[in-house]
Length: 453
Image (cartoon, rainbow, N blue to C red):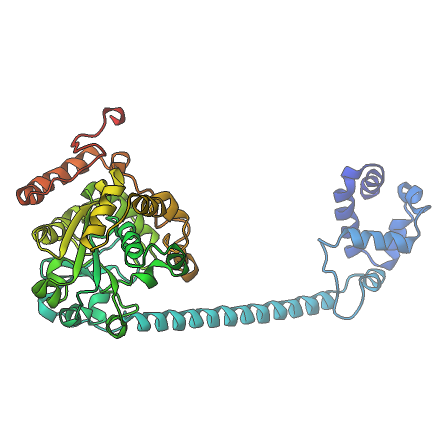
């Protein structure tokens, strides 16, 4: 039977595997004499006339590399096959192979463990630098803590006080109390908004107006360096206080939490941007998924429920909007809307320039409008927050910082029930204050387009 299989292997390529298995079995179980008789068998003589017995054994060994260990400890395969298979040699080989694997696994485990310890130390140092490891005293002004179960970043915990839900870093850094004593000058400009309401667009406009439309200078520094956030831990209040000259500052704080001299003296210019809450909800959802420090893991429906309850950073949004809207007639407060910026950017730029005491020609207004258009800013590395990718702040698989910029995008994402609930909240809180959000370009529309039904 074996000789017949070997003969078929010599004639057909498809029989190689059968040839290997049968020949290796014979080489393992027979001694030198039986191996000699096996090779002298009649059916294989045709094959043996072209190959010597030694070359036949070598071919068999090469063909059976996957079936047998390749290198024994003391002797080559050829000598073992001539003397026959020895159990003690294979046992010795197996024990040494086991020892090699054992030490390899040990070295690998030590390497992985060291890497994990290194990563833990690095993350701990980063959290310590940002103040995330310092405990927060619960009674601090009657603030209450809330943790969003769908957020897994370092800013998942919110603290409620003075009627607002505020991010954790305000407390770990102590800025929540230090901000009251921070002094803003009459040369400073504050750009304020609820998160994801269009503050980046206004920041770029204000920077050009305050720097004589110097576009080259604007491209040399990213937006966070040109327009630091007042309440954030980087660069921090101490660094902002030491900065000389007119300061351009961004903030998401409600009006009640601005520095005291801004509220009482009324000399610092404050520009507030409002955006319809439906688009804010959608934009905030994608931003929360994109930002590493938020790392929102659930779907839009869950986020919308948190947004509608006001349990998001600097929420509730209706109180945030009303806090500035009530001061819209103050000489140092300018309130503009995101929808007006997109519908008539030249008019909005002109109003901002007049508020800052700048006279612009028609060409200058058109120049600013072109430079600050959404498409241009999305391509501009100084304003599109692409440096977050290098810092590891933005999750690359999620949306970009400047994502859509459209008015009425909520139609594609929110359900009829969610849209109706936001309308109800607007009627309860915004309409009595005189605020009428514009949910689509061209005017307010409360119902979603019929094509989606």
